[in-house]
Image (cartoon, rainbow, N blue to C red; front, top):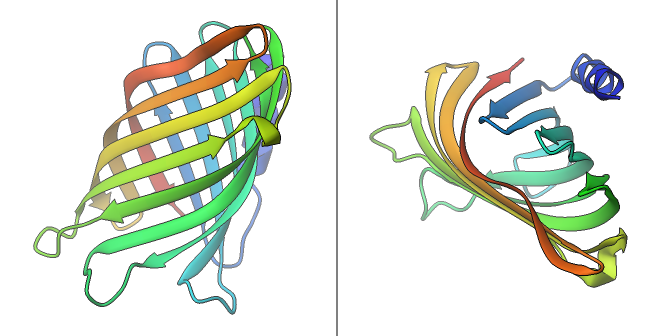
Length: 188
């Protein structure tokens, strides 16, 4: 099964986009997360739109696949170095051998101090209450924070922390990930 899912992740990551692509991989001793994003520019108030896909696996045989869209851009002229974004993402998979589907709303904020443009601090939040969490799930919460450094104009390295908890029917919550991780993000 893992080979099939990794094959799907590789196929998604090789898709072409006219405006650019991102590949983000992070891991710790128990979890690996692959994320692919294709940037699209259109008639929006924001600088860019993005469609994305992700695959998360952990050592407890849990997995979550995701697909979503978001828009992001500069927060305003009074906040140099601050980018924000909003979007929605659908997650589906298996947690503690129970099926979960969740339609999350998400937000992100990234700050890069103007005197240090290669350094960044980023936070992401995904949330779905019971009304939009299905099968055996009752809620979805994922919060991430990371410190990034731009090694090249096309790549970042980072260290971060993710807390991913899913409410399940018949028990309170399952913690899918709650550890620090290291990662790379590449732009094509």
